[in-house]
Length: 294
Image 1 (cartoon, one colour):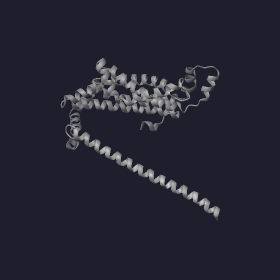
Image 2 (tube, rainbow, N blue to C red):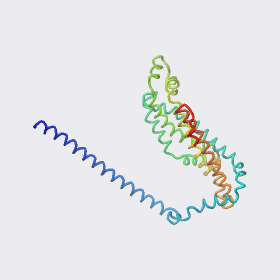
Image 3 (tube, rainbow, N blue to C red):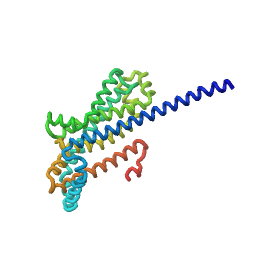
Image 4 (spheres, rainbow, N blue to C red):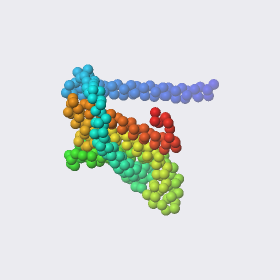
């Protein structure tokens, strides 16, 4: 009986300690939730006070602009195909900006991802500094970089391409490095044993293992970059976003053209999304899926 009581006491002590830790964790989560709600409400109130019109005052008018655009588009629906043909070259420019920036960003991101992957990095002390550089590239919005480059280089597609490419390097470098960490090191060790250089070990031992994941992430980033390149057109970086800004700024009388551009962008993004999804599914599963196109 004495031994049994000795066993019960430690078990009871462990249970009490666990319950105390659980209560402390719940209390901390509650405090964090309250702090988050307070910050959210205070931030919204501050933004609303500094807003020109006020959120609550403008809320009843939130559907006025979409109603004007849709109404004008319906009234002049016979002109929409012609407008879509008119702005198709600008759409191609936007897609070209996204494609070029994705290609450049993916190539540089691939190299940097190998440099920052533990176990694969050629110079271990470079891992932390390069990771911080990628963090900075991801943290700075494309529009900020584009505005600076437009000031330096002038308007056009080149600032947009550079801005999106830099952000793509940061995003894909991070994603590619996480993929690299799951690669088997046995081929790398085998190549190293026969005297292969670092580049040869990466090219022959790592990249073939993770290439499908690389391409999957790059295609997903291409979809994102199409949206980003269209947005950057609003600040004078060229492409269909520039035409969209002009038609919206003109006001009524041009809303039908704005609707045509919206429709063209929507159809393009849907098409790219479906094609990319089909390719990603084929890469990961080895065969196309009919469900992807639904």
